[in-house]
Amino acid sequence: MEKGTVKWFNNAKGFGFICPIGGGDDIFAHYSSIQMEGYRTLKAGQHVQFDVHQGPKGNHASLIVPVETAEGIRIVPVEAVEGIRA
Image (cartoon, rainbow, N blue to C red):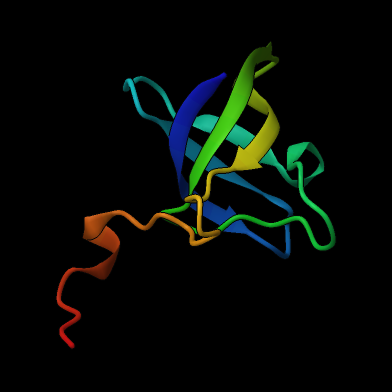
């Protein structure tokens, strides 16, 4: 499985893009490929694992799984919280 970070995801339209950790072109992500219970969505900055398949207009992610820490807390990149001070 590949790893990446969600660039953006539009809940209303049910799709978005993932930036792969190793670099390269963004990867299309459709809600139907998200592996989770309940409402299937992703958030910008969220870390995910996924498989990559070639689609008609580029790479598509499948079997998208959000990555969480052992405590069940989502990992958030530093860039997403810059400027926030306690």
